[in-house]
Amino acid sequence: MATARKLPSGSWRVRVFSHYEYKDGKKTARYESFTCDDPSKAGKKEAERMAAEWLFDRQRRAADITIQDAIEYYIRSKAGVLSPSTLTAYKSYQKNHYQDIEGMSIRSLDMVTLQSWLSAKTCSPKTTRNVYGLLNSAVKVYTRRDLDLTLPAAKKPDLHTPTDDELKQLINHIKGKDLEIAVVLAAFCSLRRGEICALEASDLNGDVLTISKSMVETPEGLYEIKQPKTLSSYRSVIVPESVITFFQGKEGRVFHMTPKILSNRFRRAVRYSRVPNSFRFHDLRHYYASIAHALGVPDAYIMKTGGWKTDNVMKRVYREALSDKMRSESEKVLEYIKKIG
Image (tube, rainbow, N blue to C red; front, side):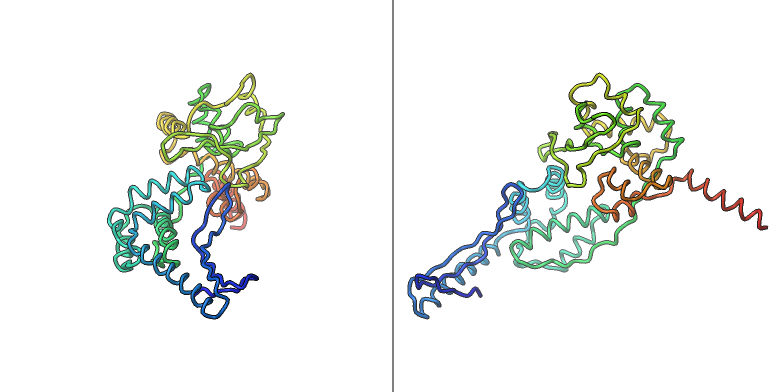
C-alpha cells in the first residue's frame, strides 16, 4: 500500500500511479494525489485510506474489462507513438485473432483456456507470438502481471536467396519497365519497398543516396510517407552508375507505386520471367547481403548499407550463401581432394 508523506505545510499526501501518457514520442507517468490537512497520525491514515479506496475502486472497475476492451484501450493509448505499420498490424490482430476469448474478464482469466486458445492457432509461430504479445501487453496494463503462456517454437525462416542468373533473368524480363528501378534499388542498394516508394530525385547527390523516409500503410488502408521506423534506417548509400541513370531527368518521386502494388507487380514479373515462384521482392535484400558477404565486405558496412539495427538480425536472416557461390566454393574443395587422392 502507498505510504503518505508529510508536506512542508503539515498536511499528509499520498501519490498513486494512475497511467502513462504519450506525447510527441515521450512516455510520462501520471499519478493521483490524496491529501489530508490533519497534521496528526490520524491525518496520515486518512490520506492512505483515500488512496487505498481509490485503488480498490479502480481494481473493481478493471474486473469488468474484457479482453476485447483491454486490447482496444491499449491500442488507443499507443496510437501516438507506434508506427502506422505497427498500428495496422495491431488492428489486424484485433479483428482476426481474439474472437474465442474476447469476452473474458481480464481479472478472472483462465490460463488453461488461454493456453488452449494459443496452442490451437494455425498461423505461423511468428504471428502467434505477435498476437500473444499484444494480448499480454494489454492485460498487463490492468493486472501488472505477465500471462506466461507457452509459445510455439520459433521456425527457421525459409528464405530464398536469388542467384546471379535468376536476377539477370528477372531484370531482362522487366527491362525498360517501371519495375526495373525498384528491383535494382533493392538488389544493388538494399532498399526496402517503402523506402523505394518514398524516394525522391533530390535524395540523390552525386553517387550518394540518402534514405530518410518510407511509405507506409495506415490502419485506414491509406498510404502516407513517414520517417523511418528505426534510427538505423536513416542512412546514406553509395549507388553504382547503372542506378544513377534512373534518376536523370526526374523530379519529385522516382517510383510511382505503393508498396502493395509493387509487390503485386513483382509477383507477376516472377511468374512470367520463369524464375522460382518462391522469389519475393524482399529476397533482393538477401541477394545484396549475401553477395556482399561472399565478396568479403565487412559486416559493419553491410549492416549500415541495409539499415539493420543489429548484426544479429543480419546474420540470422540475411547472411546466407548463394547457391551458385556455394557450388563454386565447394568445387574448389573437391578439386583439392582430387589432388590428394
